[in-house]
Amino acid sequence: MTSPGADAPFEDIGHPAPVPPNPELAAAEDVARAAAEDEARPGDDPIGSPVLTLDAEAGASVGAHVGIEAEGPHAVTHYFESNYPGYVGWRWAVTVASVGPGEPVTVSEVVLLPGPSALTAPEWVPWNQRVRPGDLGAGDLLPTTADDPRLAPGYLTSDDPAVEEVAHEVGLGRKRVLSLEGRLEAADRWHNGEFGPRADIAKLAPGACGTCGFFLKLAGSMGGAFGVCANELAPADGRVVSVEFGCGAHSEVEVDTSSTVPVAEVVYDDATLDFEPRG
Image (cartoon, rainbow, N blue to C red; front, top):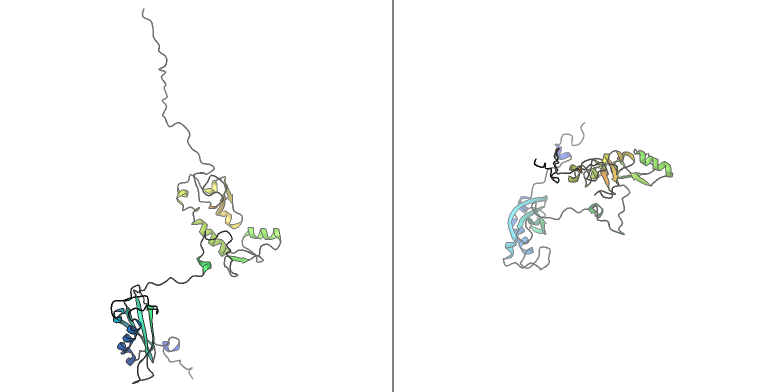
């Protein structure tokens, strides 16, 4: 005994084969073109507002036939190029249908759609994902989501000793703390940022922040790679810096203050004139 569909091809089980277009509807290109030209009559915008004024006939707005697509056994969509100004790459899509062989072909829908090469708006992104550093101003609020992967509940055991220490000091501790993912994201951002080792000023620095007396090491697991600059004359004062960052205000920088004018080992005093009297 075999189960139903055991001998069926793969596409019949989970990937049904595409339905071939109805021959009668596929041949109804003239019906579809007439419907598109009627929709694109001069003086009408593609979305229905009379804002475009075309000198040509309506047919000039409908270009070449570029293909068909079967919508089922009783419907086919015909595609035509659009010649509307500002709609380069768009296509007229006209869906025609019939109830059976020999029955009249009717027009179900006429729309203007972007084609594969059309310029379209980028995919919509939620506002909280569009916010960038520096966008937050005085009085603005930027709430985090309950499932923000950068944060973890404060009552869970943390893998950061600094977090555990704070939790013991204040009892229950903070409601949420940085998760491992949150710390890794911050570390990557700081390392590749303005005060990381790749900055131009760091490449020309006489020493790294990790050996500078003004370097305040961060607590916890981040302390091995980052700290805060405490030199008011440094460009990174009060900012998180990588231990590999550096600038010309390093605490151990030494400047040669000797004279740049060469001095000879033998000095001649020309201010005094010595002479012997003649005998």
